[in-house]
Image 1 (tube, helix red, strand yellow):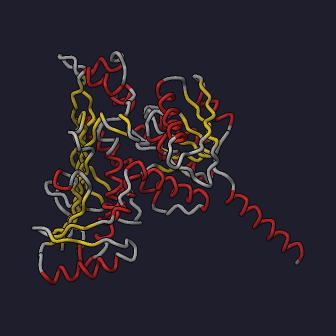
Image 2 (image 1 turned 45 degrees about the vertical axis):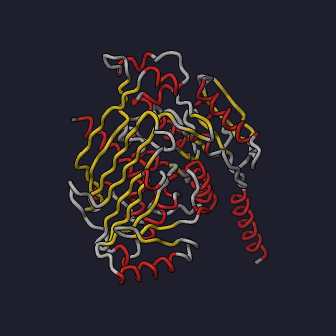
Image 3 (image 1 turned 30 degrees about the vertical axis):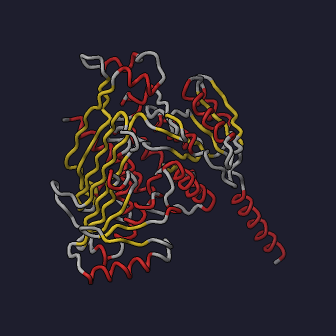
Length: 449
């Protein structure tokens, strides 16, 4: 009895020690500003000392400047201590030194999937920015990485910030209320039941300053083309909203129907303004047109079926948004009773706004909507609605309207919880695999054209 009690106490001590063990971050080859946004906030379970492995250059310089900016800001300054190793052997050095237990990857995508695979093989957890895959070869590597992660009991997860935007959260919540939404329609190839469109800009502000883009961001061999980059978020949201907590089997449930990609023209002056470079590098010379403008294949659209539902995603990159505007998002979910639509145009002052358009806009429907909102207020206190010409606008209190940058803290907190409690839902991994199958196969189809 005494020995049994000691064994139980010992086991409890080990479990408690592991759950309270500090998480130590390693930042590998940071080239995208998302790497810094992970550290815009502090986390109680994360050691403030972060090891960074990269070659010398602007990517590293800009990353460290962003972290320093967070440390020195007047309001809620952070306290990160960056320990930097530079050298061409930075990846091998990281693998050998084992200075942390979570590798953060957000940068040049050319070698990202290889980095993920080798880090997993060496027992690291990996928290990776999208896209984790930019082609079919990378998809096969990623499948292998997930299989090894399961064997080694480590966690691989991508940074899906858009799940934390309030109008998207509410669109999902209302779609689950059959009395308001009905059932998700199947749609057709020419009239999909689900549409998600996103417009982005090369010239933009991040953390209050004009973002400096690395030159390689304009090279699809390093960044990935329009079909495999931002579309990752849109495909993720379709899975997350339309089939919540359901496992998507990519071998049975996904079929690409149509796919295309096209260019954005960037003048040399525009390129230099956003990269701060004095000339266009050699690896971009091949995409110049006869006028000397870069033709960047940053746009993409494809239609596919998922569990028999027709869905379309589209991403467009422009150089710069008109003054007073920014990146925009459009999202449609069409139900048998009503459509749920997120708009972010001039009428919405370029802020995402959720509308409900019932097929039968009657007093009886409004009564049902009122009762549904009262029910949802237990989770989202303060939400309400107002009538519009064709339906209803959902009114959301300002406290829920966090910006894109704040969503990085939310998804990081979720991942840290998964790490500490080993409670990642069973659908997350197969659905990540399905998501990257969808984008990589859509790219293959567009390339064949």
